[in-house]
Image (cartoon, rainbow, N blue to C red; front, side):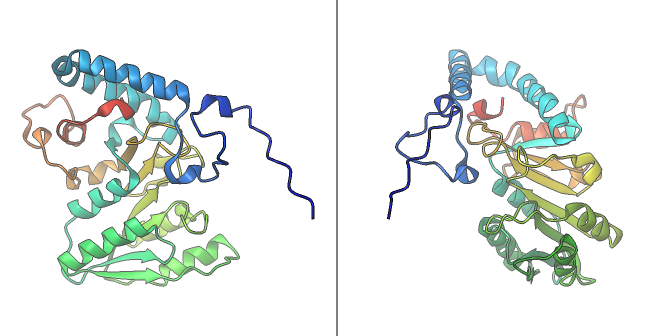
Amino acid sequence: MTSAAPASRSPFAKHFSLDPKVSYLNHGAFGACPRVVQDAQAELRVLLEHNPVHFFVRELERRLDETRAVLGPFLGAQPDDLGFVPNASAGVSTVLSALEFAPGDEIVINDHTYPACRNAVQYWAARRGLRARTAKIPFPVSSPEELTQAILAEVTPRTKLVLLDHITSPSGLIMPLESLVSTLHARDIDTLVDGAHGPGMLPLDLDRLGAAYYTGNLHKWCCAPKGAAFLWVRRDRQALIHPLVISHGWAAPRTDRARFLLEFDWPGTLDPSAIS
């Protein structure tokens, strides 16, 4: 038996700090930051520490808006519909913690749902007397319609929310979001999309998709620093959603800015260099 030839080094490798002795195949887990991005983040941290009060009070809001202005077109979204969160799991928990349900209401997940998000659904279901129903996804799957029917088979008149992975973590399936979102919307059921792997891997048009909620990571396929993620909330649902940390924005007397942005832009003191 002949030994396999060592893999040739990618010309892109020089842009990353990855250990050259390791074949890094799991970019989808935590991503990897190019050197130029690491340098820019380091410069931003120096700027912050040079005058923290000025940065947080005078600079941060403008910088977040500048990020939104770039991110919005990339996602097919209006910039003001984007709140920043540390990761997609936090985005999912943000929605689940903010929504009001009645005992006996149902949330539908599936057996390919990312474990962290499944745990969040089960946690909130147990706290609020909800029922979490699990759709069984056929695998291998023969068509997008088969995926759609598997999800809809668990929907009942008590279903209030369906959590969908845009790309399933354990199996890499792409959910047929357009058909599912429109079908569920016609039944007055909201959809929460865990788009952890969506940005940078698939073209997105969140305004056209029309889900109630979509959260995605930027540290994976967009190669942003860890801590860069977003929660998109449809305009008619924004009054329902508050960040996990309630801070000054909740009661700010300002009227020049949407309450949604005021709350999500200031969840207390943190390192905003990943997103700003």
